[in-house]
Amino acid sequence: GAGAPGSPGGVARAEGRGPALRERLRSLTDTLEVCGTQLDKRLRLQSTLSEASQWCEEVQSRLSQAPPALCLSPSGCGHALSVLQHCCGDLPEIPASRFRDARALALELGGEGGVREVEGGSLFERWASVRARYDQTLSALRERLLLAQHCQRAKLSSTPSQSMSDLSADWTTSLANRGRDSET
Image (cartoon, rainbow, N blue to C red; front, side, top):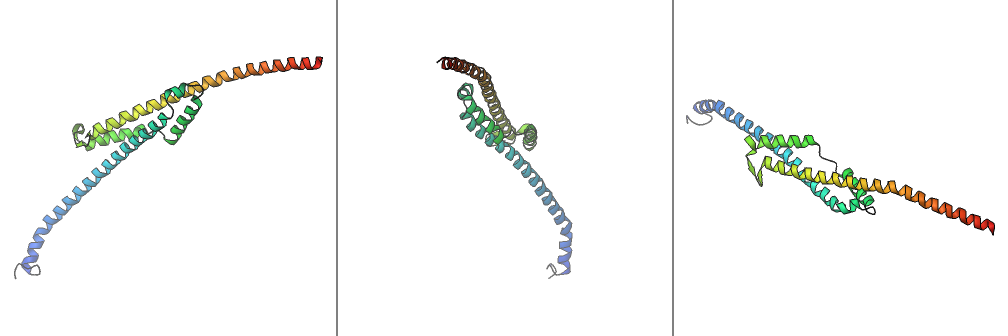
């Protein structure tokens, strides 16, 4: 009949809806692009927050192998220094620029003031929490590294004078013994 798709009336009706359908399709495409962009931003934010959290866990594990008492112990500071230096080599610091970018993403994704809720609070609150934990862990690492380095330097600076006095005593004893040996 008159309204069938192959009939002249059906074609006219479909053509009449064409611009509206194209506009709706364009609108859906735009919405998908926005969703894709938002998803990309969320993934970048999540990647930075996950990396920082994992860094903290790894560094804290290493710090447990080099407690402050060991860092200050002349007999243990060398081992502590080795553990901490390997930690710094294996787990480099996360650049401040990554945290700045993540902060901007958290604020942008969370809207005004970071109010969009996620588990554990807003995205900005989550960023702030991870950043605070990272800063505390980094501070502890640097502090223990300085303690161990200071102890090691003090140990090494006292070692040469001790060994020199030991050598001097040995040399004096050796000379005295030679004198006795030559007298006999």
